[in-house]
Image: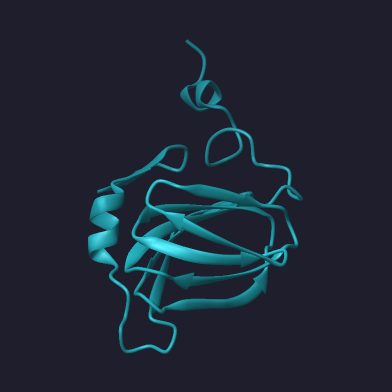
Length: 135
């Protein structure tokens, strides 16, 4: 279930994981689906098979990796971290990182872009009260 009205977005992550299984036919053995993208925030669901990988890249902003199922191996800042279900890690902007599936699983990659001033309020920049008009 996805609910979104431009101000509020909600997802059932179990449903989303079932909808977007990893692709075993690709070399990377994972699938990435953007669940939410705004001026300042991106939430990406990644499903990955054991041995799947995301090549090394620089964090485009502050980010978190939250393991929803399975386990992964994260290489960042010359360190390796093993993360399992329920664990979360945060990286600073610009940190080079790579991810490998240690087990079949899924994780949320959340990226914050703090260089933009967020659009405050509703879809047209107003607040919810302004959109309703005077009482």
